[in-house]
Length: 328
Ligand SMILES: [Zn+2]
Image (tube, rainbow, N blue to C red; front, side, top):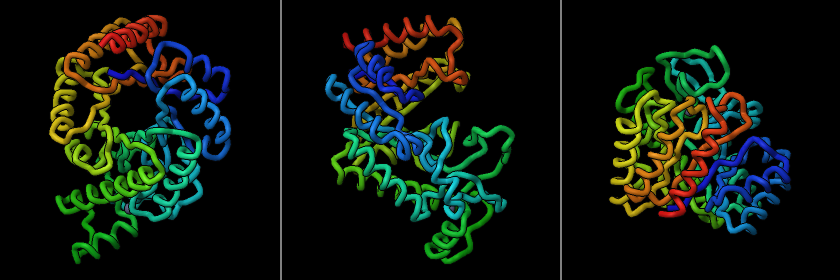
């Protein structure tokens, strides 16, 4: 089993180098934000080259890009392209780009060009989703019970397809339209990335957390998806490893086996409550036992809002997880 970690939040090459040389990772998942796209292209190229020189796999994550992918960062594209915003069912525009807007796809193609030129090997399409009340980091946004997208483009495309106005309710037909919109968006990005020599992983977000419109099996069967990824964060969901993580992994593995795809499972290396760090080690052992191909840890020891209860204990457990993975 290969083991990797997220690499984000720091854009100082000496610090990144220290992180790359530590711990014995097989691969690093670099967040490549819109700020990186504008201001750090050279540094990211150096970081990717350094990782490759050390024999590490280089994965790029469109973290927070266009407000369609997850990530605690803002989108410049969305700020300057209000015409591409998603629109809620009650007509309120929200700062997350619509996958059906041509400029969203065009912008993501520029992102792919940049990470391919920088030397990435993989793209992790990180939790693509439509806006929902849980999708905003800005405090007090609200919108409980609302859904998106019902923008002009979506309504026009819906009318062309079904010959009727797009309802303001989340009917089965609207859900089908949303699903097909997301599938079309991802297929476009995956195809464009593959043409540039990149391999593609899609991290499917649990519908309890965010609506992607697509089911896990639809990701697994999607042509061009080289790895299926899931992040069953039982601590964040206030559930248990046995009751939440284990069944999710088993289900994901069954889908992956059916479609001949490897599985990547993310462990929650952030906001871990004090005293529960050892559960992550148990989860790593589960993944070895079940035969998952990739283990990854979403971890950062600097961002205040992600800090665990006991950072030192978590670091020790992460070292143990690397051991478990490397001995497998
Ligand atoms: Zn739309």
